[in-house]
Image (cartoon, rainbow, N blue to C red; front, side):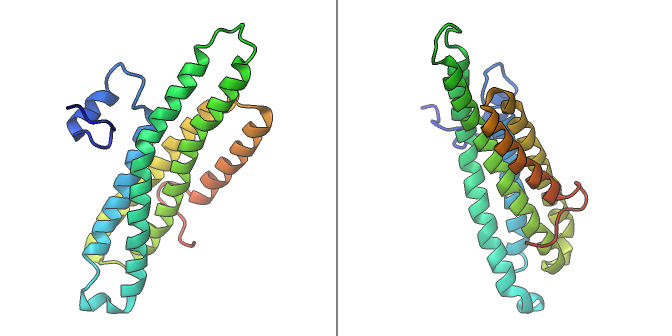
Length: 201
C-alpha cells in the first residue's frame, strides 16, 4: 500500500518524487525537510551532551534546547505535506477559467495560503538557528562540526522557504502582499548571513 504522506515515504522514494515530473513535492517541501534535518542534527548534539558530568552546569539549558528542537522538527515534518497540499489548491485556482468572476479572489486566497506554509517554515528555521547558535556555545565541543552543519542547513531552509514565499507574492492582494513581505523581510534580516546566525533569542 502506497504511503499517504510524503513523510511516510522512504528517503529514496521521496528523492525520486522531488526529481520527477510531478508538481509536488517541490521547493517548499524540500525547505521544510531541510529545516527538520537541521533540528534533528541539533538534537543529536543535545543527546550527546546531556547526562555528561562535564556539562552538568548547562544541563537544564541543553534540555530546554533539545525540547524546542524536537517540537520544531515535528512541526517542520508536518509542513512537508502541508506545503504540497497548499500548492495543490493554488494550482487548482490557477486552472479556473479566466472568465470566471471568482477566479481572481480564488487565486489570491490560494496564493496567501501557499505563502503561509513556507513562511511558517522560515519562522521555524529562524528559531532553530537561534537554538543551534546557543548550543554551539554550551554543547559538547566534540560535536561542533555537527552544530555548524545544522546551522548551515537551518539557514538554507530559511532562504529556500523565503524564495517560495516570494514566488507567491505577485498573486496576492496588495495588502496581503505587503504584510507577508514585511514579515518575511524581518525574518531574513534577523537571521544573519549564512556563516553567522544570530546568538540571542
